[in-house]
Length: 370
Ligand code: MG
Image 1 (cartoon, rainbow, N blue to C red):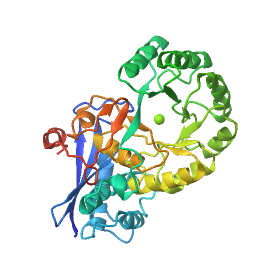
Image 2 (cartoon, rainbow, N blue to C red; image 1 turned 180 degrees about the vertical axis):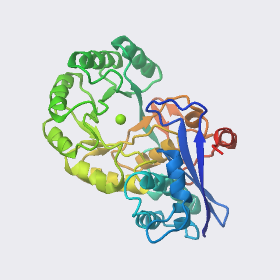
Image 3 (spheres, rainbow, N blue to C red; image 1 turned 120 degrees about the vertical axis):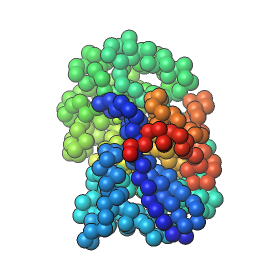
């Protein structure tokens, strides 16, 4: 079998707001073969730039576009093709847009491999350890503690057993922070998990102090309290923090995650459509499993990202948690016809070959950037 075409398709809703919301503008990838099988993937990044990473023509060594690298290859070994894509882009790649683009190709290649072998991806990865994954919803803190309380009530009503609040007014002063977290904990009750995303708000010394203040609210983790580039800071913080620390949604390749793990980060959060794909995610969870730590997917774009994350988590022994996006963008809610539903707070993992999803061609036609 040979890859005959690679199709990067840019989808964008008419009004893309300048908020941290990955459901408004995405790049989906279709990889076609000479036997009629088509694999699907997604890139959650700067879609125009990542599309160019696919379409750029052949150049001198190690500076090719991904289409040139993949067309003509046998799709049956995604890991070998990951190495080829990574190496053959390394003059302009390694980190940034090129590795984001590789993520989409890698997901599509695993989807293809599953279709070739007639197995869901979690089975290719040695699973399943579960057929549904506990979902946590994430949302911005309300402008006031009352608004935060309303949001928490919505999650309880949806039957969710875990929720994460972040950004918004959080991080500016200790009293406001405690007021928001206290009301969220009160509404969620002690039987549900509560996580907090600090949105890069502090330096290390402030984060150590704030973590002490949040300890009484039994938070599951404190996410990205520091700049994504303050690696030394994370090392210091993780030695002293009163609560578990999470980070990594901006990191790529297993080497970045190895560094976070070495610095003591308790929960790492690769985004499969950004970090280098399922090949990278699997390497990361092999490392966290070996160290008794956790990898929990960052996932806030379309049902392709969600489904890939679910297959990954279904194959990881301590992987029973996934971020579940509740935004109402059609690219999140409608692009995947059989979007994994929430049942009793758990997202159901599709059991068909590959990703086990079908895309809605009308949605692709409606939102495609020409
Ligand atoms: Mg975050």
